[in-house]
Image (tube, chains in turn cyan, red, purple, orange):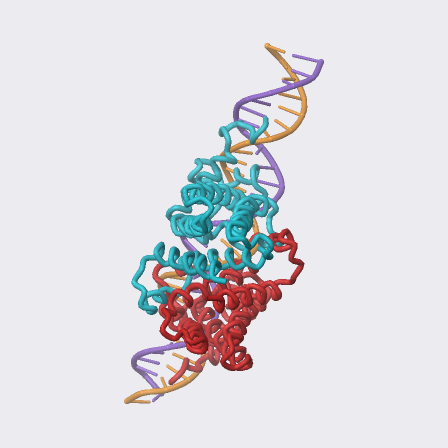
Amino acid sequence: MLFRPKYHHGDLHRALVDAGLELLESRDASELSLRAVARKAKVSAAAPYHHFANKAELLDAIAAEGFALLESQIRAAMQDADEGCGGELAAGGAAYVQFALAHPSHFRVMFRKGEEEHAPVVDAASSPVFALLVEGVERWLRGHERAEEDARPLILLCWAAIHGIAMLLLDGPSSRWEKLGLDLDKQAIAVLVTRTLAERLTAS
Amino acid sequence: MLFRPKYHHGDLHRALVDAGLELLESRDASELSLRAVARKAKVSAAAPYHHFANKAELLDAIAAEGFALLESQIRAAMQDADEGCGGELAAGGAAYVQFALAHPSHFRVMFRKGEEEHAPVVDAASSPVFALLVEGVERWLRGHERAEEDARPLILLCWAAIHGIAMLLLDGPSSRWEKLGLDLDKQAIAVLVTRTLAERLTAS
DNA sequence: GTCTTTTCTGAACACTGTCAAGATGGCATG
DNA sequence: CATGCCATCTTGACAGTGTTCAGAAAAGAC
């Protein structure tokens, strides 16, 4: 049994994660009950406890799945972007925000605060997308003849700006954007921010 | 009765908000129960429903209080900063993150997603801190002989970066920072990001 | 003094996360 | 094949939750 065993149900571990994901499409993360997930998987309320220690662990699994999906989408977007040019970073950032806007509840689960220390599962799953960012910034620096520069502050700034605009578009106080006189939809605002960020990075 | 009336309890509206705030100091936002708040206020479980339509409305009140507090702290930090210089903006940003780090649960309540449209109470309360940001960026532009420039993309970028680093420091996958080789505490990371941001804004 | 309105309590409902005890069925060993 | 084992699932329970509703109690109006 390489993966989870296939006993009575088949693969309940997988089925529960999928059921949770489906419910997150419509419901919000805060109103996602373990019992509802079990119901959707046509299983009793206590069944999940043979595959996850508690609700948090299911959410961790869902979060990990989300990071994998996010990574693949960012990677695809970066590959489609203009090679070498800074458009690569901007495309990655746009993909990040696009994911958040397309799957808001899932995204919030990915960044929900774990009770104690963060689950190592989630940390491990989020590692590749972070690596993608690091790699992108470093490649961009090399492409701009600034390979010797310390990349770390720029990495922090990029992640903060991208993650921040995603969060603000999801949960931020609404009506801030219109009040600015920008009548753009959310995706366009995200593009504007990533573009401004890229400009500001390039400007020396 | 200009404010909330003082009937049986005195001012239960105020007392409930205070009790909620106290509980948020130790508990996390997700484990804050309306019943526990009522208990802390020495009142039956149903009493809050005469002052708030539901739990969400209490949280909205707590969130609004948070934005007021945040605004005062940012304003104080900006006034203490070097006049005219760009340090004003950086100080404001640092104060923003400092608030988030000092009151993480409260901060999360302020930016939690409301069920439907955002509560107008929260929107109104968050307006002044947004105005502080707008004003700061515009003043900074004037101080740099760039008054004619469109401030809006910069405003978005600043808010996104500041809010983003706050969120990442609170809920982000841990062990990202050490993996970067930066052995700084959270506050120092926040300062680094705001400083990098200010640099990048100044660089033309 | 009554009368009314606001505030609070007590009990109830449906729901939640979680656990202990038993039923069920696949697996390997005899 | 029979046997036993053990992972899996169900049933039923417990404490706790948000919310509602009928009534008690207290404050203000007349």
